[in-house]
Length: 257
Figure 1 (cartoon, helix red, strand yellow):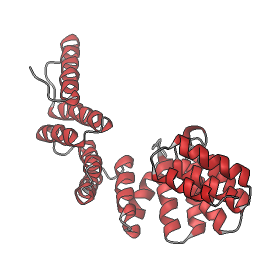
Figure 2: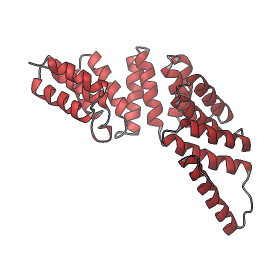
Figure 3: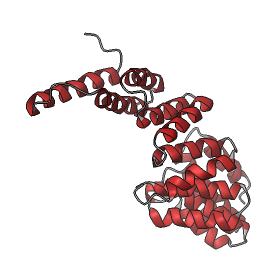
Figure 4: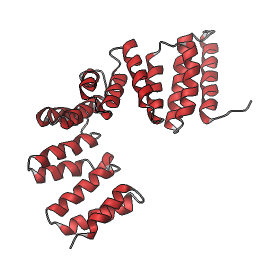
């Protein structure tokens, strides 16, 4: 047998393992929903490997088994988004939520997709559903998206409240929440507080967040702390080579005395 992708090979392994388990436990066949769920897991693996087309191929097979599985449509939304087809992505996320209204991950995905299109009024409801679900482990993501939504609507108070909740839910992973909190504090003239926010957005688990590193360097430059600004911009060039952020850092570096 010829396997056309890692995901195809993974599907065969996963189904084979399940069949062996069934033989051991006395279960003889997979139900359509069980089969669909297994295939969705493989599709998720394909997405992680950067293969959204392969993911959609697997999801088509899963849909033959159970077209009403909400996880299936959520993964389709993610796959279409990876292929830059947000019209279909939004449609699939809406379908996942219509099948299971309390599905937090799908609500967050739907809200984020709408947020990115500037459809703020539509985005707020699904994001709120996800953020306020006490069983959703990643509620900080939804609160962060709400914070961004309110920030773009120029409602700094509601934005700060949502971002604070994101940070409270996950202090170590709320990189973007700290970043937007820095924007709010900077807008209000609290430069040192903003600097602290940007630094938190660029440390530990957030170390790969290039925009936050650049924000730190720019604030050092504005404060005329040229020594730290120069060091930060050079660090950005080294840590994020051949990126627009590195180019911007080098542009700032030109004007440091």
